Image (cartoon, rainbow, N blue to C red; front, side):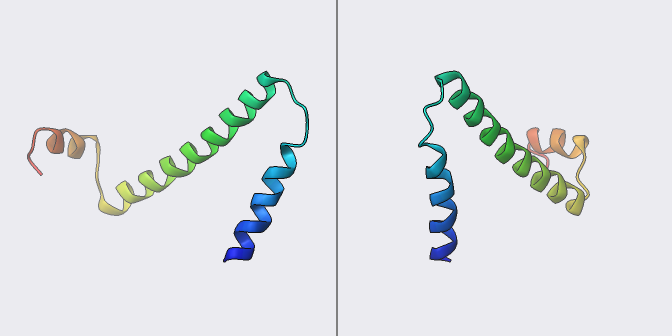
Length: 66
């Protein structure tokens, strides 16, 4: 597991050797944030589907009826 982390950490660090304008670094940061947000959204959607939850379930929970 440690070698896996080192390998990919090294790949990320190699990106930082480039002298990019701040605007491009901001775009890269936004792309990475979107990637992880999409991953979380897919996992949450799958969890909801597995439980058979709906928007109505959310409303009931918000009202303390779960």
